[in-house]
Image (cartoon, rainbow, N blue to C red):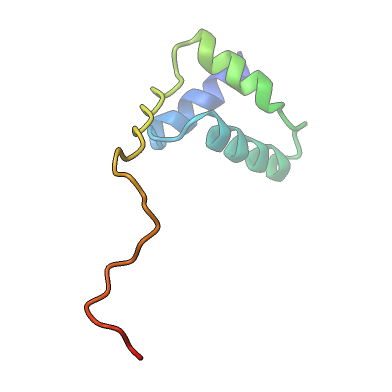
Length: 78
């Protein structure tokens, strides 16, 4: 469809953009061209069906260091 072609055009120029940023660009472009706005869920669905979504980042595991709440001080300031 026309939306898919516009998505391909945006991704061709900016391949690191996910569906949210692609949707924002399409929305701004549609506003300037006087076209109706496109729904973010529709952009997500079209990108998912055509395997255009970015890979998700893996979560960074939290630190295993114990937090005792004590601050190391060289000498007292009193």
